[in-house]
Image (tube, rainbow, N blue to C red; front, side, top):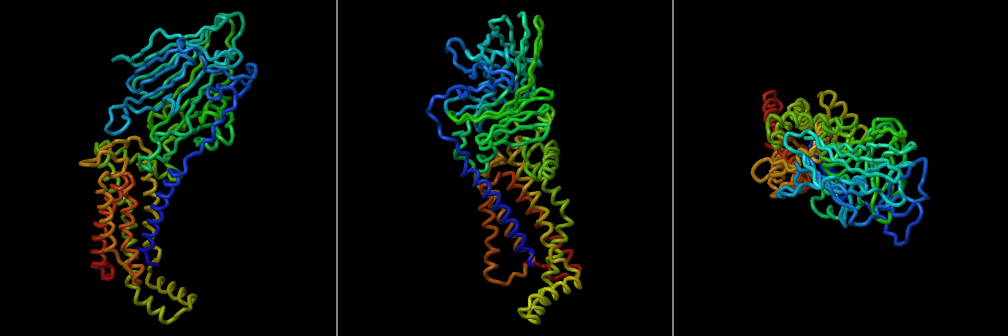
Length: 559
């Protein structure tokens, strides 16, 4: 086996697969069903403003609407140290959310918008009370809440900020919807205090849902690798820790399951919005496709709550609005941190991220942390690297004997194979020894690829000089070119037994092909590969010097 050729072929196939996978996702976005023009009736009325109905009662077969006189509704602005929220007094929905610690783009002063309600794109967080007596189950429309202020601000020295909205129904029951924001937190607590001063019990059911347009016009174009990151619904239940339920699945079938605890979310690159259901049994997770609006919903319904006459009761749920910060999300809800999706190699990616994060705390700069991580990885793999080049050197030394076997047995493949195996056994050479390190390194490469793609900590993280964002490609392609040069040097130094002119030409073009592929890879990943190659060159030089001292002169590769 020609180890160097196999190594490059394996690596080429890996990089090709990653490029093809991202290109395919970019070229084939979710297809939204064509809009319908017919007027919906009954349970399909006003699908865009769907609010789930109670399991126990329906309101004349109709769902609530958001129709209301413009003068009777207002928008409230809520400002904490991490979030800027816009709340619609009709229904008390969050129709806007900006993340104050994250800019929209690298050179922009505008903050990143997580939730919005515009003509072209809808992404909002809705919640309410349904059931027999829930104000959101009123066929006349969702409630218009009253607020004492139009603006709320978390003051210096203040740890929490509460925003109360009140609504009183025709029976005198007072519903107070309270949004509570905490300093240095991306969790918004949404609670309902039900003050039942009527003469009869009140039965309500808490729900929370996320509604989002299935096509985002802002995702068209741009970086192919970034634009193709997963965007869509996901959930966690007692049966499954984390499941993506993409827009295609929402269109095909309504999700309907019962769970203890759980959460529902809308994911996008680096950020997530998620309703965290109450810590109780019997929560219902559901989805719905709003076909005539091109929107999708994923939500939860809690168990019905009965408030006796003359008493009060509070129900609540949490809403995460923010970046995919693993530690904070894990503290907010079980398995919410799994939205940082490292794929099937998560068991390698997680330790790599922890190592990267640990080294960054010392190196300060994420680019330096990547370099240090590369040193650690290559150091751990050094025994395999040594075995690789020792095997390649021995294979080179055996070429005259292998040629003699070929001349001896001619086209008799069976005898040729037997002779080769006997020769390998006699000379104590493992023909697969040159491939093992690359087989081990490829999962590490894939894992680090997803770490650099998914970790919001690297978004807009600078390195030095012209590299001001490690999460996107090198704007001047300096790192990919240097990486290609380093691959060429490794190729020149490595032992080779390729004698076929065509194969030699293919091998010579490998560094150029890889350089082309890496032009679109994140700068952080290209930095890792470049530094890894430089370390490999140093290790290779040292290993060959040691082998030469032991008499393995055939190891002096193409030098």
